[in-house]
Length: 160
Image 1 (tube, rainbow, N blue to C red):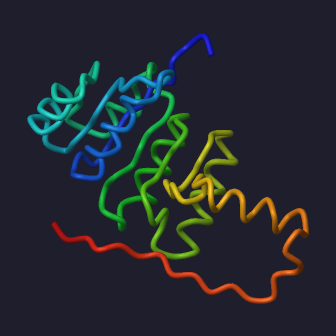
Image 2: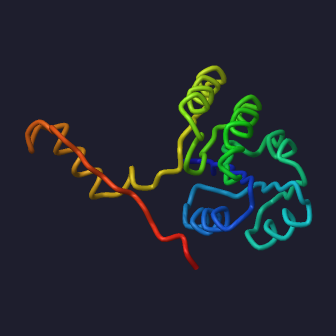
């Protein structure tokens, strides 16, 4: 790839910091801009993570031409609103889990992605876990027979 992918982050809490740390490990990614409703918080987060720009509003980030993808780490109830605004600005979106709080919100987001011809994805790392990918490959190939039942739990302790 000749060019880095320009990333922006909104919702600058703990999850956003973990994402920014991981983004530093991706050779063709660059943190271009970060945004918070509190400009001081954006500036501090931007300095800590070598962001080119720090914005005091999400809309300013959405209007930054160097940003191609927005990572949304706001509270769950705001995911749909900000994802749709980002996509209307022509940005692709990687949205923290859950993408929406109900089916209707997710459908709105998918429709907006299609309408604006941008990429939209929920930030669900387990989809790319090698063990999950291998099981899916075996199921698709018919190696384990027809799946008749699946029970799965996905949880973690969110304690310090």
